[in-house]
Image 1 (cartoon, chains in turn orange, brown):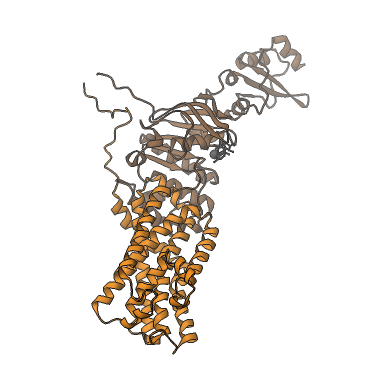
Image 2 (image 1 turned 120 degrees about the vertical axis):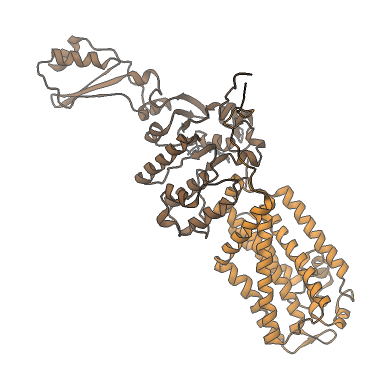
Length: 281
Length: 304
Ligand SMILES: Nc1ncnc2c1ncn2[C@@H]1O[C@H](COP(=O)(O)OP(=O)(O)OP(=O)(O)O)[C@@H](O)[C@H]1O
Ligand SMILES: [Mg+2]
């Protein structure tokens, strides 16, 4: 009378439940970092690009000022830091996913029944680490080579922390969110990079934002980069520089709101559209 | 409640899959029993990969009933996935992780997993354990795929042309890996274009043609009547004579008793190989004339 077989009759195996999303996610952070470091293109691009930008701006505009007596070097450091965050989050993630899909890495994750949350944890962890390293390098070069003053009070570093973190989160989830729509790895690389460059022009990274045409300012205000850049200015520029902003203030509330909204939009799009493989019919 | 009904590991009834209105799988029935090795044969485009990927839960079906380890693959959860292993027909380009790093990493995805060293040895990658996947040869990447598919000790393995691209030594090595898995109780569904592989490994062979199962049988019984006909062949007058018969012993006795000479140069008696039966099943070879046993006089005539 002892029926030991599983209800289906298939060989009963006392198989423990598979590991949870967090455990796999932590393992994935290590894997993602290792893959990142072994991709010379990625490393050079995300670490050297911001520093080279700084060198170019430093030599072209060195000594000039804008608005209420703000040095160009200081003004543009904020934009470059914001761009760096976009680079290591949105751009790096969007391109990497297209490559992973092509290499068959994502197909494997699907076959293993990997929880999507574990994948997101891995990506986010990798982005946080690489962005932190990149910003540390950038700020070191800026303060040593261009005497850009680093904030001395805790309040500003807190602002730096939450602005950077929201930017990283938004960039990561949006990078994942666009991945189903960008096509092949080659197309993803061209499309995402092109979009990012245009966005940089619109968002006050290459020019003083307040001097851009109004329509450009309005377009830029829809996207996260403008807010990320403005948030960074509030960290690296003196308080009087707020008068030079379009709104005449740093608008921290709006910044948090817009970046937060993009995080939520990104998560919703990810949940609804993310697929391990392309074109299942 | 004294008996437990043992259901097959895979049960498919009337499976249909359409692409652009064309049914590429068209009413397929299939049973794979627990513990058996089932080889799916069929021409290119017959629908093998489509079928297997539906069973793996990677493609949706348009009709029919599918049960894999008691669950519908279309809604299979993680616990269900953990019980199956898969080698897909195509292998990706591989990434910058080494063989060992890859296996060590993916061990974290299973509640219990094989030792990395044992897996590496089992698929013959010991020499390349420190090589990045992207730099492995095609056959070596294939072996890595096989190792990954076995890592979580699955109850059911799907292998879509697992040995395509493997050299003959690696292929035999792989066969012994599969035989070990089978004796450990793993159920295996594999597709292959190598008839010798099917004959060597499989308990059951299914031939799929145009989206339907044309025949299912153990490899040495496949083809039914076709299989019973032997061909007796010998050399005579600078040419070959052949007789197709269901009773080769009778033909041989007649030949030896009535022939003028005792020796029959190059005498062979062959039964159709699985390959010949397969070619007939998929309509690529003419079915041999129904063998009539030649009379003694025929044989004498033939020998004269
Ligand atoms: N995603 C798809 N879209 C359209 N048609 C498809 C798709 N996948 C498969 N087919 C068609 O379905 C048929 C069966 O393909 P399938 O890959 O299952 O064949 P197969 O038996 O595995 O062949 P092979 O031995 O070459 O691997 C083919 O005619 C193929 O063109
Ligand atoms: Mg196939």
